Length: 64
Length: 420
Image (cartoon, rainbow over all chains, first blue to last red; front, side):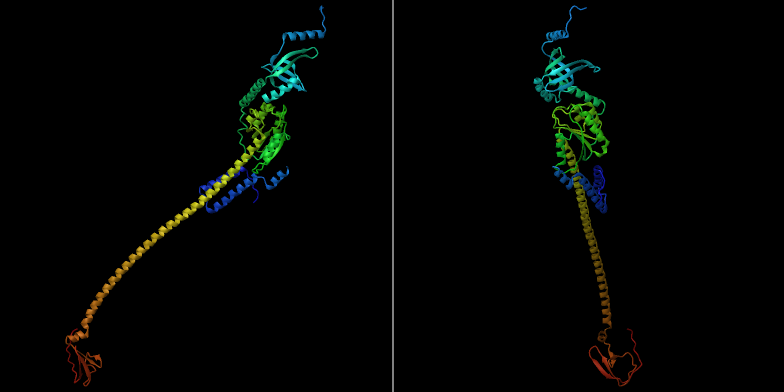
């Protein structure tokens, strides 16, 4: 998957909109699968941005 | 021409004597420090300005000798949170000295820090009032802090212990959150501090979009010298800055005006780092909550589908049971009808049979014979006419009981016809 440029608040907004649709039972099974994978993708994008990579952690530790 | 001529030194000796006589002992004097130099001793220029237009109305030199200064300075600083410096008003105990060579000066033997404290508080209040009146006091606080403040513009001095504390806390946060920090160097102490900090903020402003917030870090330095952060220009600049400003100035006493107008006024650089880490942690919790919500709604959805299937199954069962019942009922009815019809048919047939039997009985030759009739057979065949019979043939006459064999004498056409 190509790294998507999306802000945290955009991602959260999109996730919440999808969740609302799922909760209202408005999606058929095919859409549901597609939307669920979109939500998990967005969560992953956020988490990838939020945390240091292994490489960055190594660099910080080396600086000591 | 005057009678008496005095040398300057004679005159000044008389001034010295007059002052000693007229102004003996000590006086508590309120004055503003205009200039201050120190080696071991402290040399000051004290002034007074008029309340209205701030014009100079009095000015004098003053000295605090090293023996006193060594005690007064630390006491003053710990009591007021500021150092003795230009612009500060003091209440000092002084004697008036006059030296023919050096002129008039005050010899300061004590300073009451509570006066300065009160004066600084008054000035601080005035600054706050002014910022409120100008409508900027709450402006920075009202900016929204980005959901994830991750790119941080740090204003500090690279060598400050507070900066080191901050960087350590932020880079080695135990959650492994990623932060990008950029240091904008500034002097954090002394009279130049406000200007230096403002120019650092101007640099940040040039690349404002790259940052989520500004962090103003001090600490580790002198406990005194917080006056820079009560200064109007700096507070005004912070309040109007387009990015949220978080302060960690490292004070123990009352917060400064800079803290008050900042988006977040925190006590120490470490507290600022923790605050930022907490923001990211809150976001991480939010992501987890969203994931939970997804899982719950999916579980509900699947459970809902299963329940619906169950219900379908149940109603199918009911339906088919009903259908089955209906069909077996029909079958039963059909069977009954069939039975009835068969029975009727049988009855009818039995009647017919009975009639037939009766009729059969009527026509049974035995019965006819019984009534006295007889039948004649030729060669086993019953005879109905004389046709083919000639004299001499042997015919058998069957009676009800027994039979007679006779020889034909002759035949006759005469017929005794009878109806059946």
